[in-house]
View 1 (cartoon, one colour):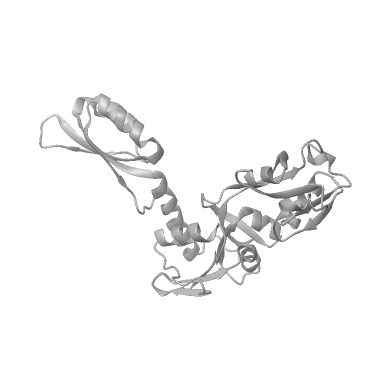
View 2 (view 1 turned 180 degrees about the vertical axis):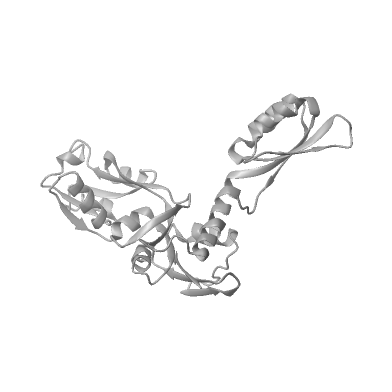
Length: 282
């Protein structure tokens, strides 16, 4: 049975549970549940603190896990990223009071407060900077006001929290993070259960990005229409009972669907329909 670590709370928890549900896995109904067995899919889910997931997976106690890239790298565990999941995107940045330091090269002798001490310590070392790193569990943005540090390093989504604290982002991003699937470094790459899990998750990602488009068009315009809707491999083209017309079916990017429908209509296509895709295998 495949043993999977899943975030039990925080910004990763709900999107991860939704994605797993779309992939056909059972999910807990009670947030107090710590373990859930999905016997039909031969999977056992362990609901853990997001920060701890990389440690459990890296130690080999669990097969794979869903966590953030920032949490994986900060943990220092023997785990590796094997798939990006496309949600919980964020940027890890330095920030300080306006008009002070402008770049990591100026941090020498200063104190940096962060909840990601491992990640920041490595980043400073990589840049040859000798600065003290102070670990805080939360509310890092108040560290400067309270005199704990001159610089902070934290996850930035919109920057509103930092601006409200009178701080500005400085320097280049330390890290671009998002939700990822991880496994123990050096684990066998050909595990069939892991491959099946990854195929399901990839199927959800594709289904979210595409819609199925159907339309009717005159046969003499089909090549121009197909150029707009090439599909992933090739569209399906079928003759209609009405002579000289064909029906076309193709997957198209959801973000472009309205524009493509407009262009198809200008070509003479009619009965243009889009439908959502709930799951797929490529």
